[in-house]
Length: 430
Image 1 (cartoon, rainbow, N blue to C red):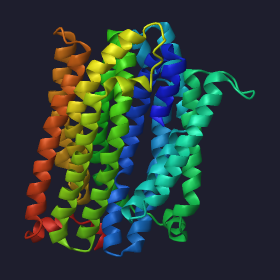
Image 2 (image 1 turned 45 degrees about the vertical axis):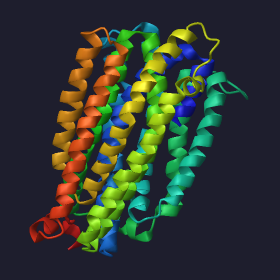
Image 3 (image 1 turned 180 degrees about the horizontal axis):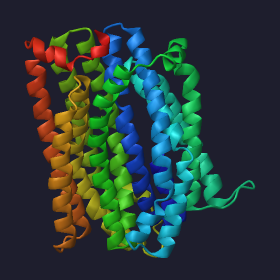
Image 4 (image 1 turned 60 degrees about the vertical axis):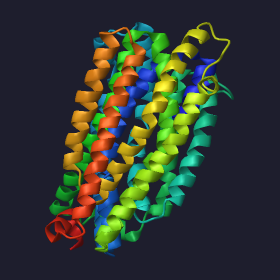
């Protein structure tokens, strides 16, 4: 959906692309924190499902619904008032106007995005990912149609430009959440909404809060990167947004594989088949990295073709933005493999409920190694925009190697260590 937004805005209203990059950075940060908290649904449900404990499944989903409502109540006001942050960063007035309008429009759909995530995570965890995929692909089509109507003001709709893409995303989030509800919801879940207990909330946040912190730090690295590009100039910000959406679109595949890895590892733990834990996680890591090798080759060999999808070659500053984007896309190709490794390794670790040490690894990798080197290379060397992505490469590579190593060590120990087996299992299952 983001790729559709960028393609339409980039080719037909290029001056708004930098503002969209800044607005999406703010939206991505709030969304990622909710994604992290609600990520607890996956490992908790997968382990309960593996143990055939349907009551624990229902109660986890019920707590997830309440947490989704809580996330909406907390994050919507923050996103709606993000213009204060943009003014503090001293962005140009026109960029502040467009980026704030985009963020406020997309706020309307944020609670529904969280509700969709609860349902999607549940279906993934019980090995029924087909329906979320169908609904999501339908959402892409709905998004493209609503984008076109609201950007250009067709069929009596107002011409809202960049702000229209925010309304389109909000509309799609509403559509996907409601479309999945009759497929996902069970009477057990309704009863569980009235029966959730303190210990289930406690366990949910024990798992979800570190996941939120880990995802928030990773997404925060890219959000801060977008804000840094905004300080370099509109051309750099537009090129960064084009390259980021290429990378993010490719990233969706290993991200999906990480959900599969988490579900398979969690189900193995739930049925106490600890010999199956390491093969499930390693399979996810190899598959995710293998796909990213292919995208790295694509980015390196055909950068101008990919960029041409998102930018009108006849635009006034097209050559400048295209040149900047090609330089960045080649760097993005390098870090694709590390990105695939870190997300699949992290997903596999969540399946064994290992979330606190990965949070520490993420903090050091993303914010010390990644952001620290990005700030230095961007503002204190001649590298500028390339320096930012070089920092991304260093941060993601550090995280990928550390997380993969931790999973190999833990999954080897869990085969023979009863104390560790008890620790990685969900208490609500027993």
